[in-house]
Image 1 (cartoon, rainbow, N blue to C red):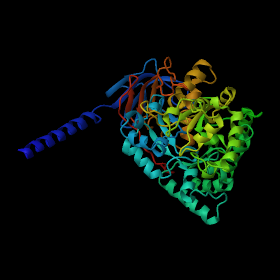
Image 2 (spheres, one colour):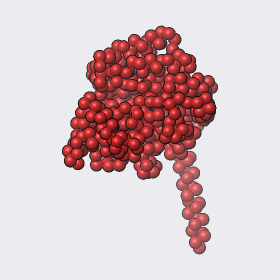
Image 3 (cartoon, helix red, strand yellow):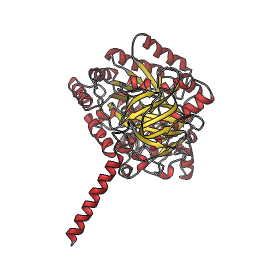
Image 4 (cartoon, rainbow, N blue to C red):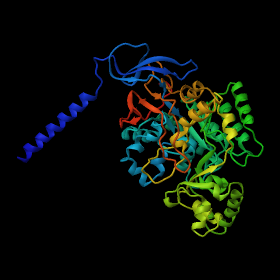
Length: 541
């Protein structure tokens, strides 16, 4: 009897599975799976917007124009704009899963985390992870994880120089590599490119990037160039006194290796000195006039988010997340304290807000000054205690000038990015509002309200320009034959809702979002369906 019951249950489960499959697969008798009608199309290029219909079959756009025919589902986009899905080329999607410990496990069971809801609600359909020399070193495994978990957005990945160097050479990082060490490193980058990396990133403010010689990066860049890859650079010094030299170093790598270079989150951090945005612009435009493929990206905020380690000289740091053991106790601690006091003289403790601190989540959302007062410690000692954790906290700091943000933004070689990562509204850690609102903020604040640039140019900086730079084939435009990554947006309601104190609020204004033909937002609500893929970059694809 028991066997009969189990057999019946088994047959019923198969029947239900078949019903689900047959009920959800595309109907071959219809012309389109999805038909978007009467929207004002901004196709991602310099073309003027126009009213048109868009027909989608499977994961591709198959027609654009005044379309007739049947569709499984029709979307009325009248009064709305229709654009390519946004492409975030400076993202840290892999942070959550590489560094978050228990949260990494919990992420498997948190739909808004693996679904990347904080990016879908911005209109983002594709991200590039592995930036700043940080993140997963094994490209193949990371992309397999993305596909196994069915993330909400597409993901490409950069091979991270800093993490790979740490993995190969350990804690005692050599400043100058021997020929055999360099050859070993080059072979590893060739291996990651063969496994689908889109290029390599460096983080020269972080250990071990801080000890890396320019010549080493040039040699790696030459290897990556052979595979059609790109180099993205978190440059060596973002502060006023050092930013120009750092930009020149990135340009030097491009020239020597004949490789496209992307300057990450371009900005001028305090102390600002007398450095002007116009000086950075001049350097980039001179390089571009020379024929070098130099571009940059920018998040539209004047607060930065980084590990606390970035606020002390690199000599004290073992990695981007922690300091060296010898500086946690005397006599090294006294030397570190002098550096901390110097840092606090530039950015006071009441201006440094703890965003993510897994060791003591209760500190999140408080400044170092507030924490020091509660713990009855002076700010410098509290700073050192935070630095000495296994993983130093990520902190929010107002370290940029708004006028610099505004002056850099309108140039067509500067793309829009978030510099954010996967996060969940259900988790305890704080975030930076850019992870929830970078793209809507730029559209609403700088385009619609302040008229700093045209809507067409702003959308282009989020779509076709980054797609062309990173060679993302058939993405970034609304065009027959291209992948159906599409955002349908209400310009009357597009807005970021996240703030520095309340950073986990979804943006508004994305009425529909389609990722590889899958409707992930419908009538402003997340559907739970996921079209994202972990995508290998191959030169000839």
